[in-house]
Image (cartoon, rainbow, N blue to C red):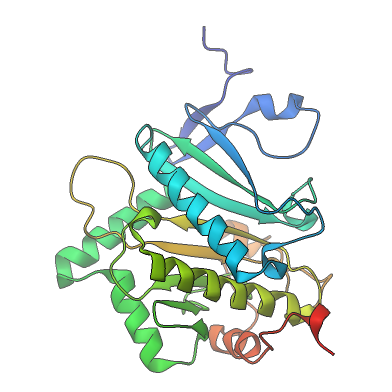
Length: 283
């Protein structure tokens, strides 16, 4: 029998027209990592057997193995669930209680709030322009150059024009790719390369193991047209001015709308001009 004090569930907020995930069982766990979400599956992915390692410090070849695993698990879980959320919380500042390099996958048979909004606006853009929103956006950013952090033949990393977090970035493919499993071998090689470059720049910014929450958004596993969807990854780092000074979303940000402290172009310029060699390896 369902017990709202014991079982995970979602509650609807009619004021904002969105849902909140309620997970009361999380307070009973003996550790502080994340646990299983409502009506779904939770998987933990260990990136390396070395507990002192991070994606930023791993060789590109090992990051490529992680990319393969993201794709394989998305395929596997997508046969059962509508939404497969691949993500990583890196660093204690983001609530990661385990120091070893790891990420997670949560799944559910309902579309969460943010993917629901992304689905709506990508669909609307496709109907209005007969093209894919994030594919057009990637081409625009590649042409302008001012918000690019890293780029190769298949992928582009930008501080998006609308970024909220100070050093927020968006990873976009340059061709139409709906989901991670749709990538081919060369695209996965290129993704591992661009991930390495981004994460090294993050660490080099304040010469610290840079904290962030990141996650992949791809087309949900639902019946109907998904041609408007484009695979992409969001990186949300909390740091603002140094390794210890973070950005807080409080007051006006929580009650009215988000604001940022420097332009997306300024943030991209700082990240773009950092070395591609990790600070620990620099002479």
